[in-house]
Image (cartoon, rainbow, N blue to C red; front, side, top):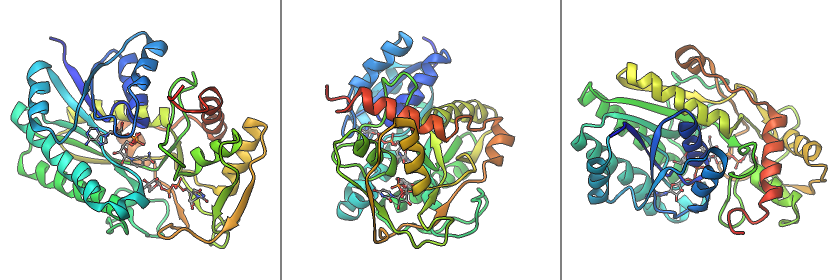
Amino acid sequence: MNDKILVTGGSGYIGSHTTLALLQAGYDVVVLDNLSNSSAESLERLECICGIMPEFVKGDVRDRDLLDKIFTDHNIRAVLHFAGLKAVGESTQQPLDYYSNNVLGTVTLCQAMANANVLNLVFSSSATVYGDTTQMPLREDIPTSTPTNPYGRSKLMVEEILQDLAKSDPRWSIALLRYFNPVGAHQSGLIGEDPNGPPNNLLPYISQVAIGQLKQLSVFGSDYPTQDGTGVRDYIHVQDLAEGHLSALKAISLKPGINIWNLGTGIGYSVLEMIRAFELASGRTISYCVVDRRAGDIAECWASASKAENDLGWTAKRGLTEMVSDAWRWQEKNPNGYRR
Ligand code: NAD
Ligand code: UFG
C-alpha cells in the first residue's frame, strides 16, 4: 500500500485545488467530504485536468467509525483538514452548527488520528484569529485576539486545542495555516469557487455581477482610513494557497510540534482596486453603490509573508491580474457553478 494523504473537505473550493496540486505532485489522495457545501463534480473535473481521480469517501468528519475505517483501509501518512463551515454571518444564526462541524469535527478527527498513529496534520485556519488589531503587516507572533463571531471563535478554539495537543505529545507535527483572502480559480476554468446562494465574499459577488446574475455590488463603507476609503485585504490566488499546503506538508514531516504560517501575499488591495482590476480583466462594467460598513469588518488586513518564505521557501507567485482573470474565466465557463 502506498502512503496516502487524507484530505477532509477535499471537494470544496480550497480543498479541490489542493487535491489537484497533491495529485500532480504524485501523492495518492483520499478525499472525505459530506458535500454539505460542495459537489462531487469538482473531483470529476480534477480527472479532466490531471487524468487522475482521488479516492472519494462521502461522509462526515464527526463520524468516528467512518474515520477509523478510513485509517484501517488506507495507509494514511498525513491529513489536510479543510472540512468545516465558513460563513461568518450564518455562524451568528447557527452557532451550534459551527462549533459542531469545526470544533467537534477537528477533535473527532484528531482522536481517530491518534488511535491510528497518524500524527501529521495541516489545519485550515484564518487571519480572523488576529482579531481587529491595527498592527500591519500581521506577523505570526502577534498575540491572537478573540474574533467577534462564532466562525472566527471556532477557528481560534481549534488553534488552541491543537496547540494543547502538540504540547501533550511531542510526536505530533501540526501546521496551523492562517489564510488571508483566497480568490481566483485554476487556470483551466474547470474548478473554482461555487457558493451556495448569494456570495458573502467580494470576488464571487463581483463575478456574479459581471455575468449578470446579480444586479449590483454593495461596497461596504467608503469612510475607512485607507487609500480610497474602502476596506483593504490581502487577496491570495487559490493555486498559490494550494502550493503553500504542499510546502507545509513537507516541512512538518521534518519539524514536529506546532508550526504557524500565514499564507498571504503581503500586499493589500482595496475594494475599489478589486473592482477596477476585474473590469479590466473581464471587459465588463461592475455596477456598484456604496452602503454602510458591514458589522464586524476591519479597515485593513494584510500578512507578513516572510515566515512562510523563510521556513517553507514558499511565496505567492500570482498577482492581481491573474487572480481576477482566473476568477472570471471560471465564472464565464460555469455561470451556474457545478450545476450544469
Ligand atoms: P468550502 O465550503 O468550499 O469547503 C469546505 C468543505 O468541507 C466543503 O466541501 C464541505 O462540503 C465540507 N464539509 C463541511 N463540513 C463537513 C463535515 N462535517 N464533514 C465533512 N465535510 C464537511 O470552503 P473553503 O473556502 O474551501 O474553505 C476550506 C477551509 O478553509 C475551511 O475550514 C474554511 O473555514 C477555511 N478558510 C477559508 C477561507 C476562505 O475565505 N475561503 C479563509 C480562511 C479559512
Ligand atoms: N465587501 C464589500 N461588498 C461585498 C463583500 C465584501 O464591499 O459584497 C468588502 C468587505 O467589506 C471587505 C472586503 O470586501 O472590505 C473583503 O470582504 P470578504 O467578505 O470577501 O472577506 P473578509 O476579509 O471579510 O473575510 C474573509 C473570509 C473570512 C475570514 C476573514 C479573515 O471570508 O472567513 O477573511 O481573514 F475570517
